[in-house]
Image (cartoon, rainbow over all chains, first blue to last red):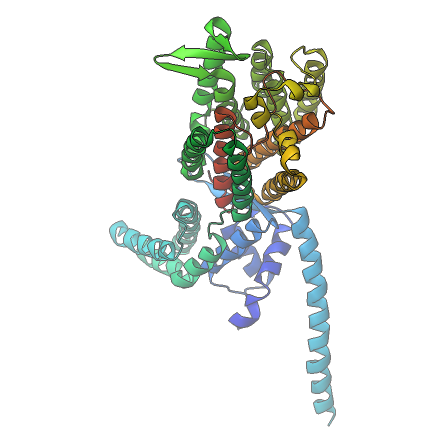
Length: 116
Length: 385
């Protein structure tokens, strides 16, 4: 079962920053890492990763550099910046708050229904 | 098989590009997406798919090219630093007012026109071309300075080189090309990527030495401070700290020993041209103190805008170029203000207020740098030059 596209939309940047907080990667590697870490649950359309990466780069949350000789295979590697780490910390706290609130509503209601 | 695979990838890339208005972003987007598709095709063929099926699945997994293109377009929308340009235009207007009573409106407008043309050229030129040409630009500018040392003729304290039917002001005409090419050499490229730290220091010191020999400590200090800013902006290794210390010592040494400085009281005896060039703030103060306030406000607003632009650009060339421009602009403005208030000496070659003072070559140089920095800011989302 895949995760709803709308649910993924708001959290892809957080997922990308989390992956980059562990080391520098190029786009294809980031997709594979997301798939691997979520046991294949998150399957985002791969091309949509690039507007997110370019946006994070323009805002200074990630740095990018082309690695490899011109003419041969060159890859654009992304790494997280200091402000990117600060944003990730903020996003994680926001996510934890959001998750707890959802859990409280959804799980508490389910427990009540099961109790009845 | 290959013939049928390629057009569909090409079709996908073209569809993405169609929605990205900023054409200069296309090569980088294409390169990155092509790389991704190649990796995906490789993975699919390794899993046993035929090459055509592998390509089709790879394209499908990318998603809607229209959506990708539109979202990339939002990121890569080229932003011209309008506020920066507007402040500089305000200063140019003050400059026109300044020369009005001096009856030099015509020649000043021609200088502005030439400066705007050079600025427009540097605004639109691809930085990659400038980086590639950097060794030649640097060499050419040094050759001009060498010619000025060997057979230049001095006019109003500045060395001129006769070439065909032109008289070239060697100092003014070499400063901006030297700054641009130095940034190109510092930010690396195919030919200069492995440049050693010692060579970088030498390249920053050579123009300083030439300007000193040619009797323009003001230009020497401008270049030294710009190099220092560039080192700080792009080098975080010890070479940056070492260069900063050396250039700082050199700047102090030059300003202490130079006999080229005049007293600020020279304004009392200044000729009309000097009053409208180096003592422009003192001249404004005699008309209205509000003119001085407006001039100073615009000057500091310009510095602040350029500093914020420096914080937003990402690639090495843009960072070093805007850092160098910021250093030259700040120092020129500060020196002009302090010299007018009598706190520092007035260099023999003058200390004009950027965009306001009368005088062709300095104004053209400032407009060239304005175009260059604005163009680099416009390309701030690009990693490739």
